[in-house]
Image (cartoon, rainbow, N blue to C red):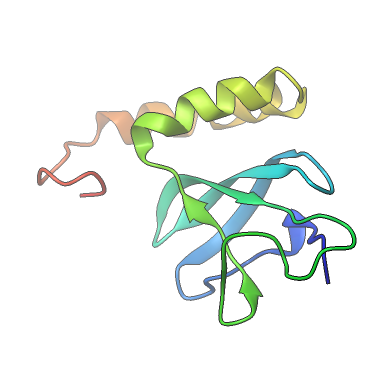
Length: 115
C-alpha cells in the first residue's frame, strides 16, 4: 500500500463519527477533511502517500491511516488555501452556515482550545 484514498480513512474510529473530504491532492499530495470528532466539528489533514513507496501516508497508528486535527486557529486558513483548488468547499460552507450560527450562539465554557 502506498497511496491511501482519504475517503476511506475513518480512524481513530472511537473519535470520528463523520468525514467529509474537502480537498484531495491525490497521490503524493495531502487531504483536508471536515470531521466530527467526539461530537465537535474539527478539521483534519493527512498526507495521502506516494505510489511506489511503502507505508500508507501520514499520520498512521497501529497500521491504520488516521487524521491529524489542526488547531482551530489554523483550520480556516487551511480551508481557504484548499479552496483555491477545490470548488466543493464553497458549497459546503453554504450548507453548514445555519449550523455555524446556532453553534456560535452557544456559550463556551472553559479555557482550553477544545473546551
